[in-house]
Length: 421
Image (cartoon, rainbow, N blue to C red; front, side, top):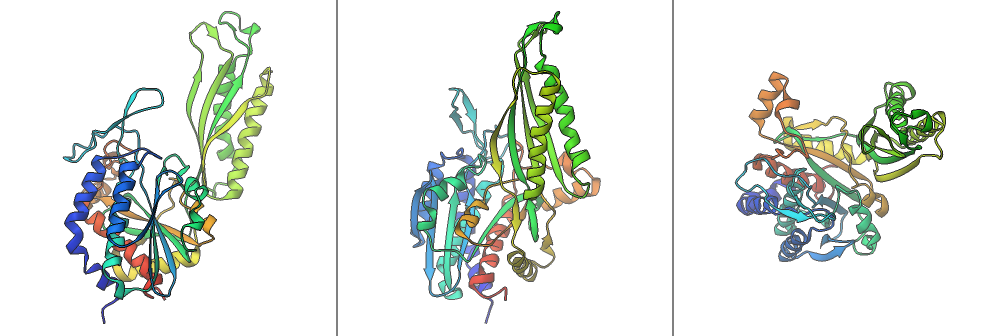
């Protein structure tokens, strides 16, 4: 008898054209976080047509489809739906021309520059294939479509919206992301995979004066400059060289003219770490350094440190990741890999953490294989291959979609089809 995954994936050629058409339509109609109304409506419609029990508007625009198919494990699979405020420059025939009015009243472009359209399309196709081949698996599938991953608040919104009471408790939670690897690539790893990310705004207070009379001022511009330099020593001098961490100051704002010492300066920075202990160490050090520089400058009051957003680290459960790795290698052969540690961040883990389920998160490739190979041979991947969030980011439709659909199927059946035991 053929393996359950083979029986389910036998239906893939029959839905491939419709899947590709859906992907193109979704790519052409991106929506920003917590505003994915068209996307969520289409998802709900397609899940209902496949006989899933559907709940909409969880948190904000979250959608969940549940299909129970006899006794067995419950597997949750998640895709994120939101796009980014990026002007698309891919030149694709299905490129986005969408714009929205921002909070400031200005029009801003919108693009699926991170690949969430791939994630949604693959999970929907997987859900259809599972519905069409119920004789090949046993248990319960939860297909979860999350809003606002880019803002870091979508998972929390679904949790706060009562997710735990709307779905059966999962035995395992799974998710994937399209990344800058050749299409056909599938990679998972045990332990740390994606970094934690914390974005901070630091307001430094000084005393304004004429530019010709600095003795009458407490100069927050100099204070900010000293902070920027000092912050770089945290990683280089306080964190072990074997422990990855990044501090990047991405913005400095101060003053209105060349001969005016302002009253305040604002720096915004981003921190990437891979475990809670390092995260706390670095964040504590930032507070210590910023406050020390303000004291050294005789600032009239202490700095204000605000956390703008925070993403938890993704630490794959060892047992789940090992089962996935075996299943992927058995199915994909040389296409399965141990993926590198990634500096990207996201909020998926808040869902399984809340639901009490172990989880694993893996990556698939989205770059045309020959293009990637040539860039790799020339050592120009960083220069020649657009990355996620670039206006030129454009995953090749195939074999990216087939790979993502297949990876979800193989992963789910490592529990539901007893293929990973």
